[in-house]
Image 1 (cartoon, rainbow, N blue to C red):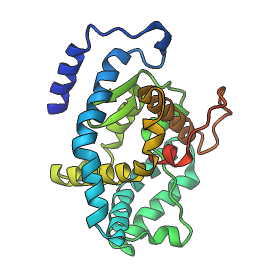
Image 2 (tube, rainbow, N blue to C red):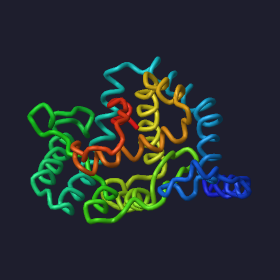
Image 3 (cartoon, helix red, strand yellow):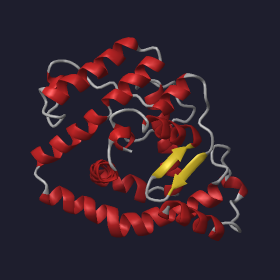
Length: 242
């Protein structure tokens, strides 16, 4: 509810904003709304809440504990990975993801230990946004959400569908918030070494948007996207952790 209210406020504030013609992007028809939300995310939420929390989290949380938390949250997505692998016709990957969930949920103590990777069952990350892409559905408009960050119409739809798959759908609100918090802190902490790339870019908003779409191609083509038209290259760690 807070996110919806904030989105309405920012939309109203940005209603009179005009995007310069040279910055028009067919992927981003809502740029006049997205930019103020991006600025709010970076100048307020990230600067005063998320980044300080991520720095504090990395300082007080021992690495083995962090690794266990990441393993636990990753394991929760294994059924989602399995279902989407099957929907994309990748039956072998679907079986691997299902096996990972069974092994890590039992021998790995509810996913705290990634035993599956140690025995050769590597994670095959898939989501319904990627599934829609494989089925030929386009990205749709680029969207920027308060706190959540960048997405597209296709991917936000995919996220909503993925949340209906067990075990995500069975979690209580406090459990869902805890999982979201761990993922957000880990993702933000992993990007701290890459901050200069964003801060030194001519237009951080456009830089982040381009990185986001590069990442979507990277995931859609399982790490082997077609050659980009532009020769500009981005840091692989930034792509992986966005």
